[in-house]
Length: 201
Image (cartoon, rainbow, N blue to C red):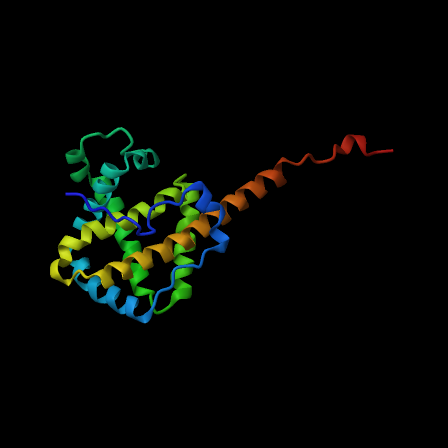
């Protein structure tokens, strides 16, 4: 039943690892990765809604703390109710749409980076911290492996892991950029303005 992806690099970094992110090399997508992802996506997209639901039900099952980010699902304990939730289906489709857009931009990495950075910024506004980003990739892989059956290979798994590492790294940058921007806005707006009444001589 479980789909353990140990050593995948998709789980959130520990506090010590997060401090060293500047020293880490970003994930690199090779032409082989891109080809494997695109070929497998043709099969995956036929079950896009199913994959989205499976991915999030598994996410909430394996990492229940993630539900805290989702107001609508925060108090839902019944996984069957989640499986039939229109709201969860809609969110799963939004995430799958992002993955679809990512696959479509694999030959235009600058556009993919802009897309991922904006998504990271929006996750700051939703109060969905980067520590959860990696979980989605791991659950996506677990959801698509049975769909691809004998087409699933270690090379394909590595290609998808690399894509998610690449995208979540950029999302984290976007999140932190938005966080700094909001902090600077708060500091700027919080500075006292001189009292004009006391400036007259």
